[in-house]
Length: 172
Image 1: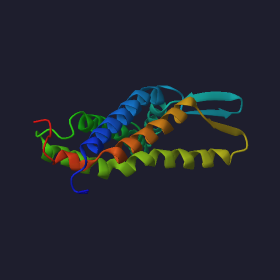
Image 2: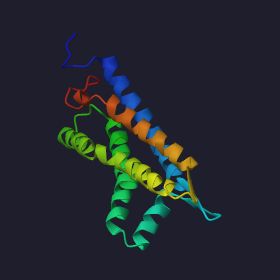
Image 3: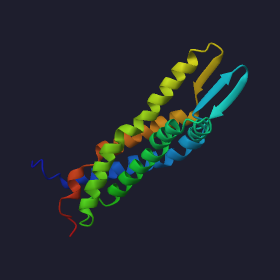
Image 4: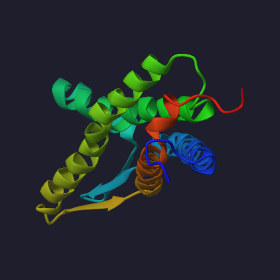
């Protein structure tokens, strides 16, 4: 079997799987950003925080750089990555825009690590808050759904066979 040219069935599964995974992640992206990501309880006061409300709070508190990083890593980068993968999986081996599609794949590789930065920030924040014995922090439903967004996003990018962009369309 020639490894440079994927089997027709392999390319179909690659595009179908990427389409399924990216569409699933895009659908889950909405509730992941609308539902509470974390619940803070301190001195009897309970506060549910979404990703967006966390960004707004950081911004209002003057942490503009951190707010920008969380916005990029939690909202913009995952959305861009998923939209690009969804687009690529719709017509992976069409003869149009091959160079642009290759550049989009390279872009996904560059921004990929940024989509995990927010998880790191949340872990650090939870560790800091847990040091205070009067505070309680728990993960909300939004964080569980966001985890699935990350998993399906990773599956989508791993299942896309980039070789199909440059091979001839066999449906001609």
